[in-house]
Image (cartoon, rainbow, N blue to C red):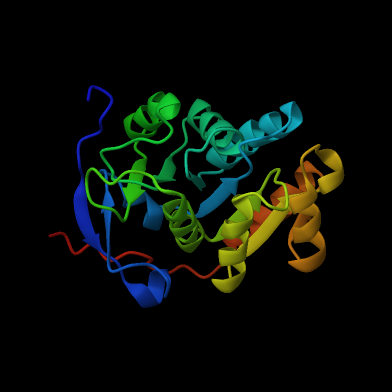
Length: 231
């Protein structure tokens, strides 16, 4: 398959420092060290998003990259992809968590983004063996990794029943800083409304709000998230 990505190396995960819900081993393309070198924020949202949601995602990814913060997400269409594009345009580093084997890229239409992530010193991460195909339940499993490796989770635009809400749920369980853009700014934002009212997420309405959120992330005590026990 000419679009396949070669396999990376296996890493042992420190369950206490990373997340109690993370499995014993993951797979990663080179440069996973960036997870420990910089702060990480998962910038996520629905595949179905408005034009404004796409722009906010792009601008957010760009802003975080300019602040030397890694952008983490699952390479999905919509908000995820736009956030990665923004980060890459600013020369930033990204960590992509796949719901399949690391030699598979999903969706295939975002293959070029995955390649750019690697070219710019980012990494692709998976807990599945080579050749594992994406299945519905693996997307939910993947979501806990996105949150687990990040100090914060920022939802751009999401409907209440979207998969994005799984990651938000994991963020609360894992005590990550959860934030979302104000639902009134966006079209497909019933999920944002839920996050604001039931999850006590920090609400981003202005650039100043985003800056304050980032300051909270910067104040989080440093710790090592992954142990690099290569096999």
